[in-house]
Length: 155
View 1 (tube, one colour):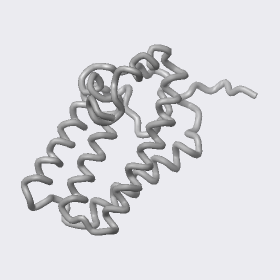
View 2 (view 1 turned 45 degrees about the vertical axis):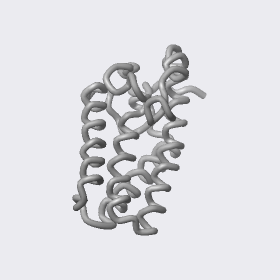
View 3 (view 1 turned 45 degrees about the horizontal axis):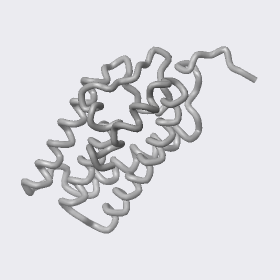
View 4 (view 1 turned 30 degrees about the horizontal axis):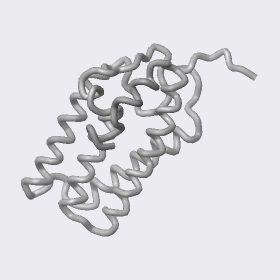
């Protein structure tokens, strides 16, 4: 049975809802498990770097293409400029870098476990989102083979 609804009108999959909810919960728990702004220069710089990456990705993505859920909007397009020339998921990189700064500033076991959980959650979300991008954009496969996921030239 097929739906007459456009992808934008369709509800999000249960996997998408679980992944986004888990991501947000883990981010909030990491953020509030210690001081909001790190007191040492290294985590502060790391946090600023993550913010710059996120802002750059946001500007490159544009409001019409921006989404928290992995599903691709009907009007969406493949973004390969800005930080997307260096990594396929710079917003994920931004989230991981910022939350890593909080985690490193006060590496409580609880916080470390939360951060590892966030890495796993974003890894699953990334894989799911990339499967959707492969279906929607035939050129994504070539892009995927040449650009690393989260860390330029590494991974």
